[in-house]
Amino acid sequence: MFRYLALRIASSLFALLVITIIVFLLSHLSGNPVDALLPDDASQEQVDSFIREWGLDKPLWQQYLTFLVNAVQGDFGTSLKWPGEDAMGFVIDRMPATLQLGGLAILISVVIALPLGVAAAVYKGSPVDNGAQMFALLGQSMPNFWLGIILIWVFSVWLGWLPTSGTGSFAHAILPAIAIAWFQVSALARLTRSAMLEVLDAEYIKLARVKGVSEFQVVWKHALRNAAVVPLTYFGILAASILTGSVVIETVYSWPGMGWVAIEAIRGRDFPVVQAVIVAYAVIYMISNLVVDLLYVIVDPRVRHG
Amino acid sequence: MVDIPIKPLTQPSLWRRAREFPLIPVAVLLIVFIIPAFFAEYIAPHDPYVPNLRARLQPPVFFGGTWEFALGTDRLGRDILSRILHGAWYVLAVSMIGIAVGVVVGTTLGLVAGYVRGWFDGLVMRLVDISLALPAMLLALALAAALGASFLSVVVVVGFALWAYFARQVRAEVLLLRNSDFVARSLVAGSSHTRILFRHILPNVTNTIVVLATLQVGIAIMLDASLSFLGIGIPRPTPTWGLLVSDGRDFIATDWWISFFPGLAILLTVLSANMLGDWLRDRLDPRQRQI
Image 1 (cartoon, each protein chain N blue to C red):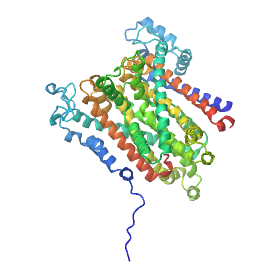
Image 2 (image 1 turned 90 degrees about the horizontal axis):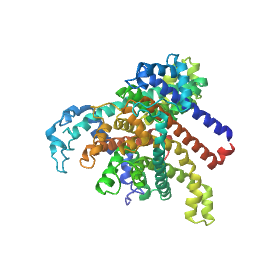
Image 3 (image 1 turned 45 degrees about the vertical axis):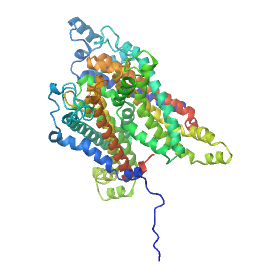
Image 4 (image 1 turned 135 degrees about the horizontal axis):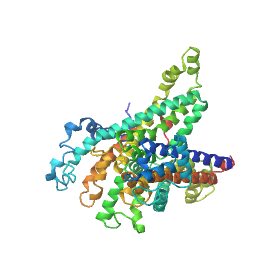
């Protein structure tokens, strides 16, 4: 088990390393990194001290090492668009907003998708099942930014129930969280349905029924527990698409999280902040994947003892 | 003798029959996506770029508008329908070229990795893991920040997002095929490894590639649309569908049609592509059917 976890951590770190290489090389691809990383009106002294600090007069691999050492310490330079802000500090300030939205989106998708998938499996071939499958197909084909705009139109403009955009209260988070969760609901429901179908066929389920266990207990306790392993594997992918979704949806709703910062930084050609955002996203993503691996160990004894 | 009419036990439902032959999805794909992509110049009623300030913010027909601007006009008086039709070409080009990049890179690496094994296989599989572990959006952000967004950067992002799926799947199949009799016999007959790989093994994995590629069309279109919505796709004034949706974002309260119809075009195209992909998978490669 420790070997398994150690391997997972090592490969996560390796992936992170590759990301820093990509980010580093891209700052050089755009031509002179001084142009990319310093404001246009920087004085000659600033340029010189910048070159010394980041070792830009050294060979490329030494420059990368300098970049990496600084990055590990959280130093990505200072923001160009928001003067005086430390790039990584600025991104970290925005992190809670994104995590709140992502957490709420995960909660919504699980609360809707799990019962939907279970119902579709238990009543296979029924209108419930067909409806769930059509919903899944539709959900996976709908652009989330468009859904976000339509939700604003319906719930904010027509009905006036919820605020159109911005932040400040729980009500502000509802629409963006739904827009992010929508795609996940269909994917999770499909997975839950197929996993449940497989488990419901198993001998121990028949035995439980023969023993006279109530149907409710059979489905929700015996079957779902065993079926839950499969959707769990999906949570790694879920984390990725929620992060991706947050970039898009935060822009739709002007939600001041990391995704919003990323897009604003790109518009302002603020490369230090873009680098910081990408690395921060990657770290969140790797950590959530590690958590999934840990959950796996807890849920599945074969992994625990294997 | 009495003729006993033989009836099937259960009549296949309309839904099931629709899934058996995807006539509706194919028709929708043709009407919304493929025909506009190639013939937009001839069928679009207006110029998609030239502002017409006298026709600003016309509502769609049936909502107080006229047939002249069937889906309404935007703030500059440009016809939404014409812009959607002209945008189809860019959506098609990006998704097809992006998928082609993914197919070529992924298939080649998967073929060679599965065939030669050893350190090269290990390297490719590590790259696959990393690529699958990186949300494509991160690369898109980095590319857009460094080089500025362009047609090329979008194609690179789409190709990057997809190649690993092809590499992994192809490699897995090659691992099985390389031990089969026909490979051993070709070797004995004096075929070179290159010939075996591309003449004998490749045709055996083509079905898989076609099915995977069809299933990726929806993903590619969605990725392209998200990027152009964020302003890191093909730059203005090209009327890509994501950009058209974002044009109407701030006017949804009063002029809903600016965002609504381009988004509907994306939805219909991706939905039909997904249904077509599902159907193709069931026909060509039932093993991959998961649900």
